[in-house]
Image 1 (cartoon, protein in one colour):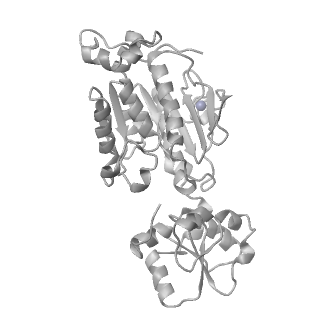
Image 2 (cartoon, rainbow, N blue to C red):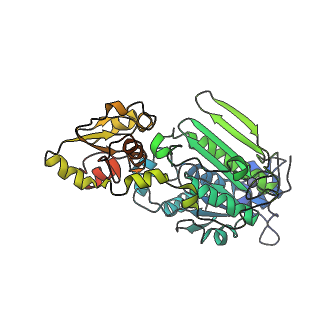
Image 3 (tube, rainbow, N blue to C red):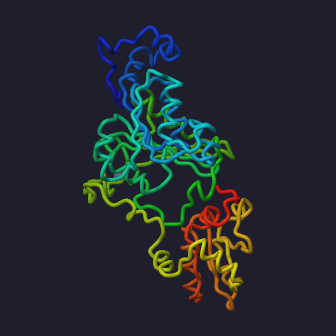
Amino acid sequence: MSLPPLVEPAGKPSGELTRDEVRRYSRHLIIPDVAMDGQKRLKNAKVLCVGAGGLGSPALMYLAAAGVGTLGVVDFDVVDESNLQRQVIHGQSDVGRPKAESARDTIQEINPLVEVVLHTERLDASNVMEIFARYDLIVDGTDNFATRYLVNDACVLLDKPYVWGSIYRFDGQASVFWAEHGPCYRCLYPEPPPPGMVPSCAEGGVLGVLCASVGSIQVTEAIKLLTGIGDPLVGRLMVYDALEMSYRTIKVSKDPQCALCGEKPTITELIDYEEFCGTVSDEAVRAADGSTITAGELKEWIDAGKEIELIDVREPAEYEIVKIPGSVLIPKGEIVSGAALFRLPADRQVVLYCRSGARSAEALAAVKQAGFASAVHVQGGVLAWANQVDPSLPTY
Ligand code: ZN
């Protein structure tokens, strides 16, 4: 399948490439499929990248280098040292700065001809339509399901192509969702996974360079769509396995039953995405209600010599990085499956913690279900402990 170019070439007189532009883009201009016409389309293009993180870094840098005329950056976060392993648009001196500003500086250094528009608010249902309407195409570099469904739904409602990518450990996926020409994200994933089922990169890790592999696929697709060359990744899912070093494409069809882009859509406007995706399950919320202690309270309990069993429900690799002293490791999966319930003591109060408090809430629900009524979990997990009790500990 080929599609017509998304963007018209920059028109006369201001649209003509200057002498400097011709020199800068000469390696594009001599490719017959791109040539002057394609480069002028890129110059006229307005691309929005949601997130200046792992995928957003290579995406923004290559879109800038390619000569996309207007680049929008959505990010409300600040640069953290743990970002630098993969978010190559930011550097050491950017730690603590807003990611959007740091990204803008790098883009301008790569290509001062690009107009950069910063959107530093959190993208949500109240602002997404107005922001997306200003762009031709959306590149998604987010890492959470609520934002993905938000981006997808807004793109369908506005009829914008949605260049999606996803990364986890050694595995990457990418596709182009465009309801007018093929499936949308909901055709592929009608429902978000149950909360706690799919770990994020913050929980499971990601090989830094994987961002470049998947981000470059996204940029390639964006350039193809903007200039109308090649076969776009519409209706196909690209699956990349870095350990096998294999790329496979899987056909994805439009779902006639899709709630958003199907024949009888039931979703005709934006919804509440936090509620739709849920950061923790209803069971976990109920279990944690009244059974949550702060890191400070845990410290008081330990100092007072209170008889507790402190259980870390993260994965072994995380436990190796940082832990609360006196804790034992029992990964959440073994608690939820019931396999490790026999290891919980009946004569002491069980205290669970994880990295930030979501997984421990899920585990808490299973532990209470198993009859440990006095069990509690630590709000904010080991990160809260490191912040509030022992700042000498490393965080991740
Ligand atoms: Zn759909």
